[in-house]
Length: 254
Image (tube, rainbow, N blue to C red):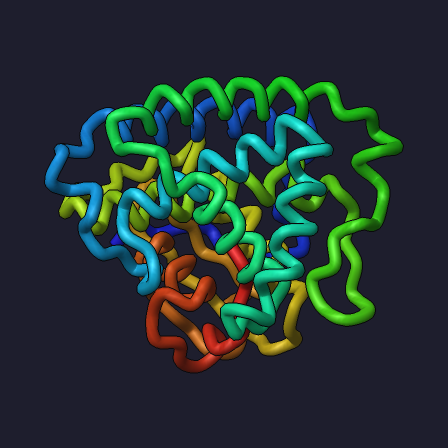
């Protein structure tokens, strides 16, 4: 196992707007490359998102990019989702939003999806790059009752984390290894760990293995529960895709 210096989570530099846009451009490229590799008989393979197959995930990510490209489309999806949340027995407005995205795009065929993603991702990135700082600061995203986040929560890294996590979902469904890299995947993971650590107060030390890993703790010395795990597996568990235990019982939406 690679030995990493213990990094206190409070010292992890958070991803700001400009860096987020650079990371997004790379993630968009990686997701597009993956979609081009999906064979015709693989679009209906099940994924870790138990209600969705590979096609469903691709359509969802395309719809999300279209929402990022247009605040009008973002609002339309939000309104449609509110109506559907109760209808489908959802527990969060995001459940209805996701269902609205899929219903509105039920006509899309798998051969269309890679090109649709390339177009939507490019438009979404341009809109996110140009969104004025005062607009990004508007506290319009409700995660929980009385918990509001600025638009930048989604438009900087939120959408990109979603694409990244779904790239992992599709890769796993296809049986393809995820070749995580230090500068891209490792940076996303470190930022996730930093934010996740603010959602609870349990002491912990994470030994995340591989090139995208690192050792993160509440303090400069190992403290609390010690977990050695692949960093992608950590993110899968935190996002509800695996069985949580110990400090990983604190969920984190990706």
